[in-house]
Amino acid sequence: MNQNQTEQTPAGDIDNDLSQIVIPLLKGVIYQDENPSQWNALLNLQAPVRDYVAVLGLELMLDEAEGYAFLRSRPDEDEEHGNNLPRLVARRRLSFPVSLLLALLRKKLAESDAGGGETRLILPRDEVVDLIRVFLPAGSNETRLIDQVDTHLNKIAELGFVRRLRGQEKMFEVRRIIKAFVDAQWLAEFDRRLAEYQQELTGQQELTGQQELAGENEGDDE
Image 1: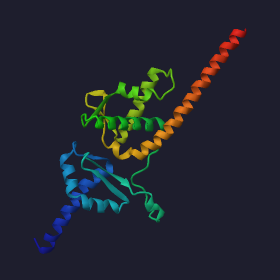
Image 2 (image 1 turned 90 degrees about the horizontal axis):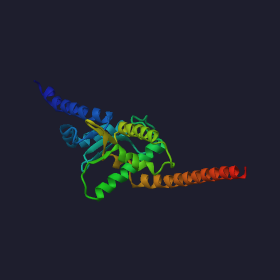
Image 3 (image 1 turned 90 degrees about the vertical axis):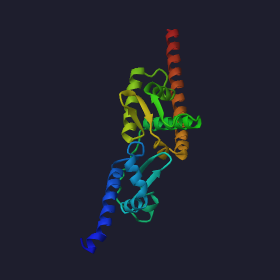
Image 4 (image 1 turned 60 degrees about the horizontal axis):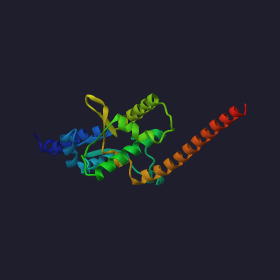
């Protein structure tokens, strides 16, 4: 082996190691508990990974305490300076029910942490249904409500914020990565929207009650 080959080998090894980390990151989240060896490799190569993904217009979000890492597009400030790179990580617009459920699960996780409970928050589907029930019109069809919650949970699971427990389809673990996406500012903004929604809902219920009362009065007049 000549000198050039000797010098090229370490660089090739680093490139290979980077590929083993960056490719999974481009596909989704790396969790410490799910893949310890991959997680340790990421910690060892954190600096070159950050440099590598920066070329793609991405930044590495890594939380050692919570044990997760993912990629996201650089803040919009880059666009204001003319760095209009195509987005590799697409933005996703969430429906109001999905946003509502995300906020409720995030608050539930915060309550669990404040209470000094288990680091894992596991909820049965029935409890998730109860969380969202109070924000829906009175008299909502129970079967339809459960179907809707299942649909929303499927979407949230697809986004990686919850996961079903193996062999227990009606039990869900709230992933701690939800804290990275649903922060205090997001919750405050959503609380404002939620207050507006509840006010609108109250107005609709009062209007319905008035219409029913008017109907009863018309019946009495007859």
